[in-house]
Length: 229
Image (cartoon, rainbow, N blue to C red; front, side, top):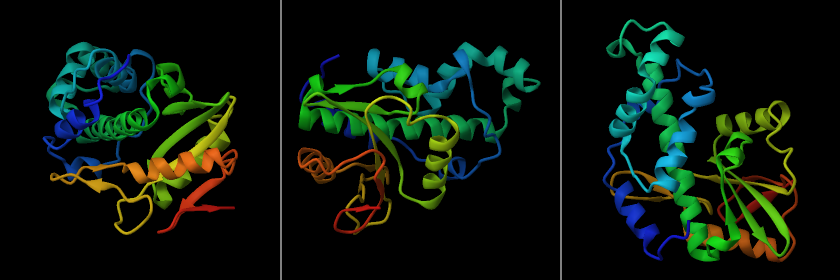
């Protein structure tokens, strides 16, 4: 859907109200993929993109468990919903907060480019693509993730084993850094939630216009720009 011009500001105001839970973000004891109707990304897409329901984590957790609680108990062997492990909750937490970053980036690109040049779908998400830029007859598949070694390792693993780069178009890595002073450093909101900054978007678009972006050639960043190898 087309969004109003102030949607980005409204969403950043929403993000600023969230309470981060760093203890959940650090738990990685439940790493199984959630397939089919249990895939939380599908429901986040429905809520945020289609219904414009911006839920915080506890609200999303309640929404998710109300729909799939019985299936989760049966599939993962929990005795009751209160026995669901911190690892499972952490899995949902990380999925949602990653989605929030991607959604913000989408809105930021929309502000700069207009919605007619952007495309996103559940099918793209299942192929590991956060959204597409469609410019001058070319397709740029955007991959968003944190700029650290663990995330880069997982990005390389997905490229090699999950065919996330198989879709036609140029695959663009757009990592964000939580360290300040780097070109791709996030802007921290009052609650510590980091969001993409417009100069990073502008830089990428200038590189696209110059024809400098080729498939998967952005592998890291410096304080002054991208590193190409």
